[in-house]
Length: 204
Image (cartoon, rainbow, N blue to C red):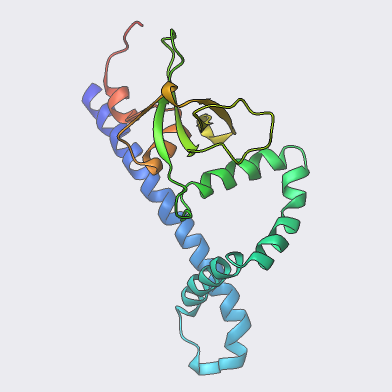
């Protein structure tokens, strides 16, 4: 019975991410197909073919990416974002999701990010974060001068995070991709939940 429970948990934890991903993709494709069918079928008639919604969805995302790369559209997007960045509760959710997405977006040349362990001298506590700025010389006056870096510390379940400016000697690079570190931070570094569930509880 114990082995059956372990197998069930492992199967469930394997199926959930796959099922949720497939469900979200199917939901998006179904919505695009329904929308394009209502819009274009009356115009195209028999020429309309299933799958046009998928092509429109991909094309729309590419077009949106092109538009937001233009400075004028980026400024307009900033105005559109104002309600989402100022309303209570909404700004926390939107800001967290936007920060999470920004870490996976193509970066400008020189904006090199790396995963680091942050540890203050004389302290045993370590924090995992992302170096977001290597140089702080162009920051406004008032910041502590010296060889310092900006480190973003994401919070579990992406409910926010903190940016701290610390001496470069406080951080130690970790051989880990940024995407993997963000995924681990999303679920509070819980690791492989299936393996943890199979192990007997231990005292700290």
